[in-house]
Every structure is written in structure tokens, then in C-alpha cells.
Image (cartoon, rainbow, N blue to C red; front, side, top):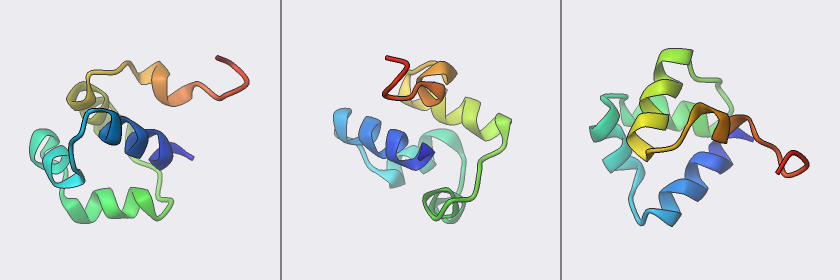
Length: 66
């Protein structure tokens, strides 16, 4: 699930969803929707990847592809 990768990266960087919201300009409510399974737009995925300093491919990788 996409949110698990986001959460994993937040934990690795010792940051919060609140900080991610501030850094991306994406509301905390919208991030909560992503946590609940709503798929983010490409534009928002780019913002999240940039804020977390990871490539978009990071979110596409599965454990089998690593």
C-alpha cells in the first residue's frame, strides 16, 4: 500500500504527517484520505516525493522488485 511507504519514509526521516503537510502544501485532511486508501493525484505524489527527497520510483517498487 502506498501509505505504508510514505509512513515508512516519515519514520526513517523522523518527521511527521503534519510536517509533510506543511512542506507539500497538501492538507492534513487530504493526507488522511491517502492513509484511508484514496489514491493521490500525480501532482501530489510529485510533491510528496520531493518533500521526502525520494524518487517517484520509490513508491512503485514492491518487495519483489527490490
